Image (cartoon, rainbow, N blue to C red):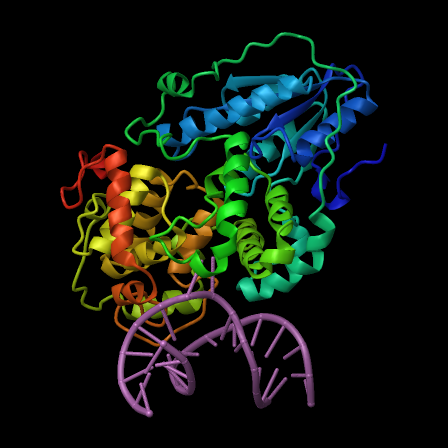
Amino acid sequence: MPLPIAAERIRVLNETPNRASGEYVLYWMQQSQRAEWNHALEYAIHSANEARLPVLVAFGLMDDYPEANARHYHFMLEGLRDVEAALENRGIGFVLRKGAPANVALSFGRKAHSIVVDRGYLRHQRAWREEVAAKATCRVTQVETDVAVPVDVVSGKCEIAARTLRPKLWRNAERFLQPLRATSPHVSWSIPLRSDIALDDAEKAVRTLKVDHSVGSVSQFFTGGTRTAKRLFERFCAQRLHHYAERRNHPENDEISHMSPYLHFGQISPVWLALEAEKFTSTEGINVQSFVEELLVRRELAMNFVAHESNYDTYAAVPAWAQQTLEIHASDRRPHCYDPRQFENAETHDPYWNAAMREMRFTGFMHNYMRMYWGKKILEWSASPQEAFATLLTLNNRYFLDGRDPNSYANAGWIFGLHDRPWPERAIFGTVRSMMASGLERKCDIKEYVRKVDRLVEKAGGPPAGHGTERDLFER
DNA sequence: ATCGGCTCGCGCAA
DNA sequence: TGCGCGAAGCCGAT
């Protein structure tokens, strides 16, 4: 049977041969935490069928994943519960072990015929894959399933903006936006395995982890997992896609897909999302185009950025022209200047900004349009652009379910001029694009957004606006 | 309400 | 070498 996966998605990471006495093909699941539309999983099944072996999926869960807290773990464990159930239905073994992902992979790799891993673009994800490739005693193959068009197919360099990436992406899109056929394993997994953590109760499971519990679950707003992601997205297509192009920049509404947390944990396939949306092309052409632009161009621009810019999480990644102009204006008087703790506690003079910060803190999400305003104001109201960058990323990664994502770093950079162009010079910003409260008032019903956030925060049991919050987390 | 100008660098045409 | 144009903007002139 031919391999149903484009060759460019597949990369052998070491020169070690398959183990002839291997007992199973191991899929070391890391970035793409789903059991369907997962090219790495399908590749593992295909390899296992050729070798007449069963498939084992192993996930390594570490307590000290960079910047992760109870909020992130709760959502992720809900997703892994879906993975476990779906794999069991397909006759595939699943085991979750506590420990560094690379160690868990190497440990189960000792009896494996070969190891298959999905792809991750962040520094630590690349390091884990390098470590496993170097130490494994069998073949390690990486299969790209986190983006539609593999990053190195799109471009061999760090792209300057969406406009330079867009044509390169679309040239290849059709070839990679293909349905992924699910193959049945010929040999079912039959050995009972015990995971280190029971997944049937995510909340209970999180309590047993030694993670930062001060940022709590937001499960009353977002439930993790492939099943919920698909249901949400099908509802989005049926009810909201029709207005997407027109309303996606209206934070007072909820006419957006909310897929970013699911994409961040690999619980949903970007290929599936694109193909689902494209089913509506004949009636919703403009809206589908607009959605797919966000899903493919903007998202894969972020992947391109972290893949090619080793300093993606520091101010050094901001383009030179932007650093220069911000430097010239570093000594400009700042009529409003807040420290990180005041930002975090939503204690600025601006009710729109405070609402955005409260949405982020109490729901784990923020409407896309407000993410821009929120970031631009941190730049404007911090003592220096460098401090602003650090504050922005810290808050982003602490509170967003979709924080610590390639998109987080690209979006943070955009606030400071990345992937953008110069605009008329003004105080503090220099020629970096600015945003003003008056723009929000002109373009959307921002007062309704503030009311919306008040309702959400009340539902979350948070304090009413203007009362600060319970704890100063920057004090820790 | 809508429109041009502001500014930098890429990519394509000449 | 020149020219058009770009993630979501802002301001001032009509």
